[in-house]
Length: 420
Image (cartoon, rainbow, N blue to C red):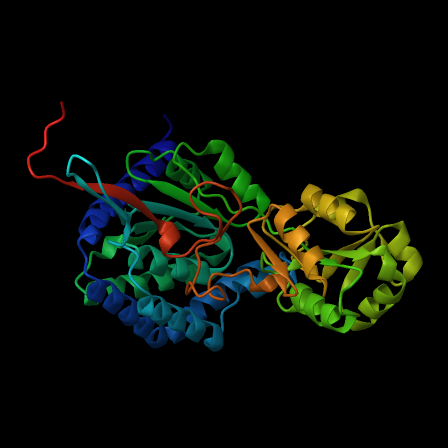
C-alpha cells in the first residue's frame, strides 16, 4: 500500500469514527436542541459573511476562465445568496421533527403491540460538486433528521465549504451537540472519494449530487448503499391544446430562470398540430436561448439550428435547448420516456384527459401539468431545503427532504408472551 492510499484511508477512517460517535449522540437529541443548532448556525453564517464572501471570491477566481458562466453562477455567493442559505436553515428548524414519528401501529391476536417508528439513518456521506449552498442544506437536513454527515464538496468550492462547515459546527457547539455531526473531507484528492464510497464500517448511505459523471462514479464504485441523483434532462411538452401564451411564459421560466439547476427544462417537445404557429413565437420569446431542433423544427423557423441525436440526451445547464416536433400525445410520451433522465417532465395543455395520460405514463420522479419544471425543488414542495432529487425508485424518490433521510424500526410491547 503506498503512502497516498494509506493517508486517505486514515483520513476517512478518522472522519468516519467521529461521525459514527456523533450519530449515536444525535439519536437522543431533543427537537429543541437540533432547532437551536440550526438557528445558531444561521446566525453564525450572517456574522461570518465577510469571511465567507472572501473564501468564495478565492474559489471563483481559481476557476474563472476555465469554467462556463453557468458553472460560475452555481459556485458564486453574494450577500443575498448567503442570507438565503441562513433563512433555509431557519426554515428547516421550523419544520416538524421527522424522528420518532409513529408510521404505523397494530395489535396482534396474541396481545403484542407493534409500532413502526421513524429513526435516523446514521452517517450520511454527501458528495457534490460546485454549489456551496448544497453543503449547508445537506448539513441542516441531516442534523434535523438526526444524522451525522461527512461532506465532500467539489474542489472548486473548497474554501467556501470550509467556512460553511465552521458555521454549522458553531451552531452545534452552541446547542450542546457534537461538532463532529458535520464534517468535511479535508482534501481534494479523488482517492478520498473512493475511500468514502468504501467506508462500510462507518458510513450508512452515500448521496451524490452533481453531473452524470459523478453519479456514475458513485454508482459503479460504491460499496456503501447509495441514493442516486442523476442529471436533469427535463422535458416540457407543448400539447396541441395548450394555451400558447401560458406555455411560452412557462417554458421561458423553465429554461432560463436559472440555467444551471437540475430542474431546468433542456428539451422542448411540441405537437405538430401547433408547431408552425408556436415555434416562431418561442424563438421570439427566447432570443437569448440557442434552440437546436430536428428537421421539422428547423423548417418551422430558421432561427432554430439543426440538432444532432446527442442533443436530445444532453443536460446543457446553459442557454441552449433542444426542440422536437411530435405527431401527438402518444409520440410525445414515447420520446420523453426514451430521452428523459427520470428527473422532471411536464405537459402544457388545457386538456385534462391528455394531462392525465401524460402524468400517468411518464415514469419520472416528478411529473407536472402547466407548471415550470424549475418548481422541482424541496423548498418549493414545502420540505424546506433538499439534499437532492432522487431519480431511482427505492427508499426515496424526487426531492429528498427530512422524511426521506429517516429509516424506521419496529418497537414491540408485550406482557410476558412467549412463542409456542
